[in-house]
Image 1 (cartoon, rainbow, N blue to C red):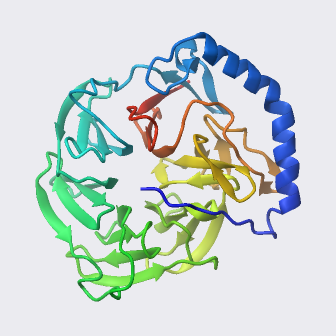
Image 2: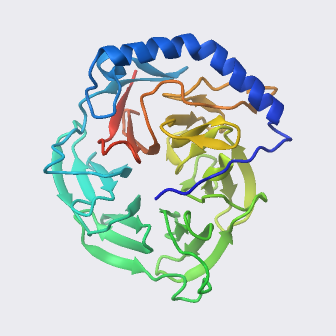
Length: 372
């Protein structure tokens, strides 16, 4: 599901003049590289549908200590037997299996081995499956599956539904006129469930482990604690005390909150329309669905991956421009290599390889980035 999104610039951190200066600088310094890359693409066939020839040339993506090569064949399946439309999200279970969520009703879930071999598929028949969260409850692991049609379901790893959250409209949490189009979930250490209404009314809803509503926070707007496309959410325990990292994709930002919904800070990522945050070790990873090649406008087929360290400074942008800070402020980030179209999610394995899921990418399968 696509919504038109418009980013804003906090002029205290990043001015319109700075934006155009950086865009001109980027264009001048990358024109020659762009011409070379597009010439290469014209000379060879792609390995995976819509995946440039970079993959076969072992092109290195990323910056600093976070560099990767592309595995051109990982996860490719026969689309006649195992079709996908959008590869929305992926998680890894205890056994190291890679669990992919798609919005193809014939097979909402595809389970791979880490080598990319198909293990099994199952479906809930959901036409707009979008969010996938893995929760380990000790005795077993479970999945929270979110469908943009308004369903939030808890399943076993083999697809048995064990719980479903009631609509906030039916429960009186929302008024009848409010939109409910959920996109994502996360589970806190105490078992509380948080649901992102990212394509609906822009709230995050908190429930206890029994499904009882506690509170909602956020809502649409440009204030610190408000959102524009509240697309994703994750629990961040890197600082010791758990907090929530919430996506405000239209604001090119992540926003941090306490577990009771109190706003703490904004992590501004100029130019990057980020999807859900994924915490792995000391780092935060995210797919960038679009980057902004024109002021306040997203550009199709301009995605990349972004990686932030424990201090939430961007340290690498595989497929994107090298992160650059001026006077402590992150400058605009754009797609540099035409490897990705619209990065919707990432999954990180035990070796810190990245599996990139894409929306609106020609029905292609996930792309594996092998860490160097």
